[in-house]
Image (cartoon, rainbow, N blue to C red; front, side, top):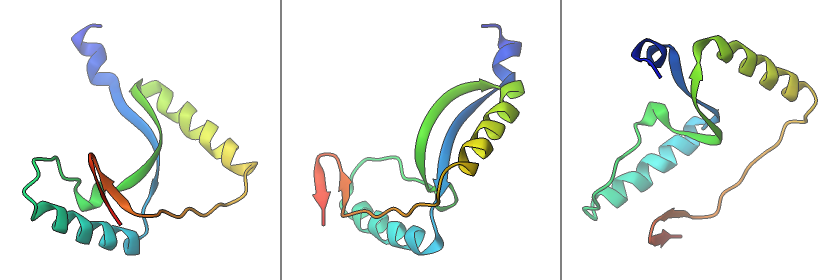
Length: 95
């Protein structure tokens, strides 16, 4: 792939943003884990989300098509709720 083409690509994924309550909870967990001195890459608060599908490098021209497909899919599906039980950090599990 030529360098000019790389600039036109966007790292794309479909995700659900977390509500503020969940972000605050995750921040608390993250701070507790940080005190254990694990070497890790920590998520920024404004970037926290639940990735449903990682698409990868996508041409800028295809982004509108993906948005349209997601909007059409949403029209035919009912709202849903999610729940989680515990938080994990490989190889450790926190309850």
